Length: 111
Image 1: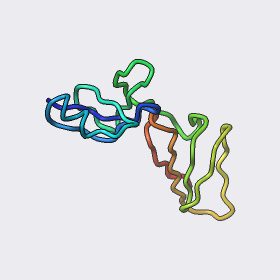
Image 2 (image 1 turned 135 degrees about the vertical axis):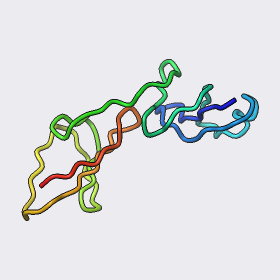
Image 3 (image 1 turned 90 degrees about the vertical axis):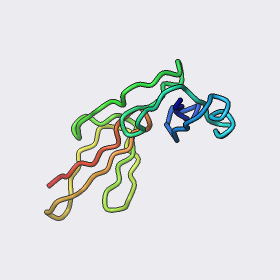
Image 4 (image 1 turned 120 degrees about the vertical axis):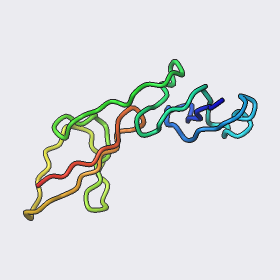
């Protein structure tokens, strides 16, 4: 049987273990929990309030989940309100957004 290991406080999936529940419990960290089944960490997170797997939420560049972190040209920006992205030089820019385990990690290309 397969088990998904996740960070108990945040619901972030860290690994999948094949074996018995006892094997999974022995191989997890103290700050982690285990649920039965296999869940892709890019698509799912574990809701810590009820220990169930849920699809990560999608969003657009115009409606980012707040708070989040934006990475532009290897610099991280903490976002606490809906931003407007403006650049000094014309060109194409890649904006990577990380809003935590409940949301998809996405990359937007802005011109």
